[in-house]
Image 1: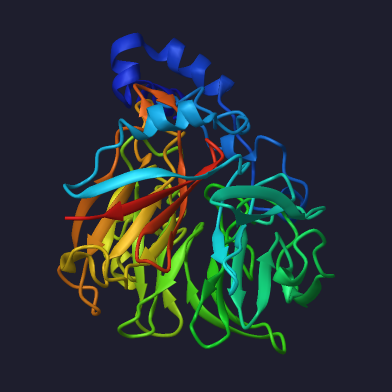
Image 2: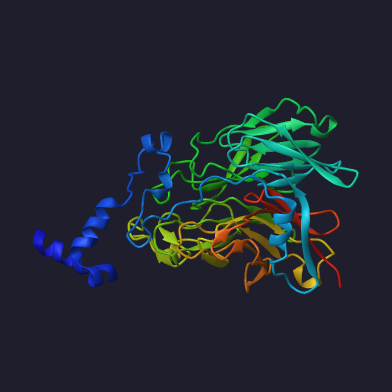
Length: 419
């Protein structure tokens, strides 16, 4: 029986058919593999935890090492000259020298606050005589990727804590003391970085990612919560999301929509990342049982059918890594963009030919039906297969233009329109 199983394993897959069983067996022995379905892994993950499900087809792929230093003005302008936009739109440098620029939030006095990934810093950007001046404002945190401004307070989401900084624009040379207003989050770093999604009523939708690529998620992960920073009240909104680093509330309905990064190590082209719409409390979006709404996981489906779960509104493409997203409510852009969704696609790593590295636009009704996806900005963020920029967040400015944070080039761009 064992011999029969070995022979069967040998002939499965194109690699075995072409190269023979001996090579496949040797490759399999070299693949990265971790058992992530235990608490010790979650609390003490290896530094390369994201490589733990490596397959033969994608062996050797790895995330881009670290973040480069912010690009020079000349480098940025050269890159932006190659960004393709619809007719009438232009893209310019709004601010440079913003290391690891992640989520953005505008203060009531015009200060731009910007989160970072692993630098532990929130930067403040102010206009001084027409020049954008960038300065570290809050330091010493873990991964303060997400920021939001509400009722004269700056909120910062770290791995396991939501902080409130009252009246931050009173003195931009010294941040006020931060107050922890919610801390019922898992402490581990893997997929622990978060963005804040204001609900328009003083609460925040906050994602809690899973500490693995694919696993049975620990309780209190793979979900979206709605948190009231005034008293620490929280409620469960959605389940079955792997890793969301971006969401927005539909101005037409108040519903939460969110981008989701699907699992790695299945193939270059499977499964697709997603745009999801939460239409009722407690919806389950499939992880880890079903991917992209129609593909059971080969190991973790465990008898579940994809029809049990909420399908995505849009399949965005494999490994495009959608992050920040915004509904456009301004008047500067043409009417067809009103109430549509812009999504910053950070770009792939678990793929031989890169995908993403662009801004997508989704025109869709409030019921989530009849979505139409188009590419809004692309071309300059990749130079062939070399990464030169990575869109990480989007923010609508007061004049109706669109601001774009780039955590790779360390800059913020402005996309404007004129006839």
